[in-house]
Image 1 (cartoon, rainbow, N blue to C red):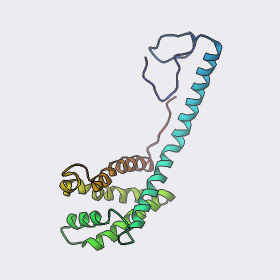
Image 2: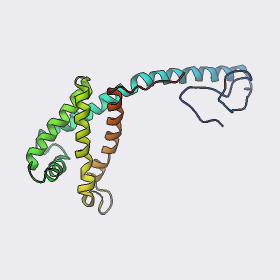
Image 3: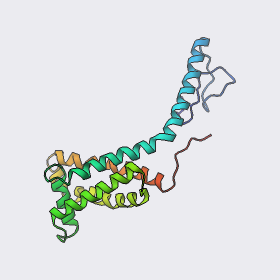
Image 4: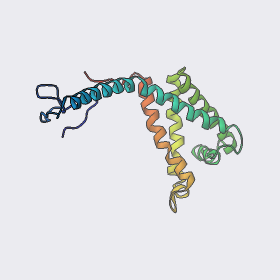
Length: 187
């Protein structure tokens, strides 16, 4: 069986029609099945076009809402479950020059700014640069406090920090798109 590609091709059409490379020509038992296969191809093509157009902008806004939410929570002492780890991380990374309470406010400002740039699309290039800097701090607890996060099994805080890998991957896609990369369908 052929490997699916981004462009829908059906090996379920009659001989002589377009089919996946290397797939044997198959004849469907009746005209109804052929119509279903053709409509499925049309639907998959439409879905591919829709996703090509809207998946990166949707990811950008969703990621922005996550950062905006996380950032705003840190402005209210005790409201963010990551407040303590964020403060300790920045304090550790700056060798104590930035105290934990100040660090939390700086992280709150940075995350809120990132969120606003991603949601609105304004100052996006600046936002993704700040996002790149933030990712270093966001993933640092894995190296700095790994024993606390994963010492005797996965802690809730460890899960909270580990999910940031998804934010890094999403941020990389959004950054690539904002810097000129384009998702496109091959002809």
